[in-house]
Length: 225
Image (cartoon, rainbow, N blue to C red):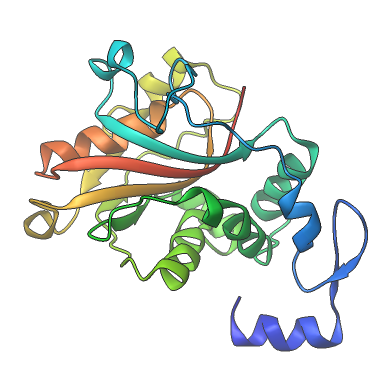
């Protein structure tokens, strides 16, 4: 939360979108605590495992090693929070997203570099911000891991409602690497708000691996399904 947002919240506090309690975020601490918890599992086939590893069966089809997922997109509170951030310009919701994510980040390597998955520029202009960038900055402030803008978004196609095959088609050439010398040898953790088919994260991860990243993991607030 910025200083201006904090000052505004003192005089015009939010009401929790789940229980209506007065709070300085969109979800009060109690409602953050009771959001559905995604068990440690492979993000692709959803097979539960002891870590958050991509399972051996799926590993050959994706460049992503681990995905930290906070909650389910089907959870009503999570879905409303994301909708307010993405379509209601509610920047304060990013703080609640980070509140939910933080307990899931146990074991994130100290050498990790947080890389936001850039949103299509047309969406950024509509909202006035990129929610993935804000989320990465919030996580950085709490963990001490740096944020690096290693990706540029070239495509403008909107992914909402698209299936996996359509998303993959839309995403061809959608990202290009930035600061390639800095990417080489780096442990990257992508940051995004929601995971549906995984096509966006996987496309971004392939670009980073091709540019020399040693490993690519990801953090998302919510996963569909």
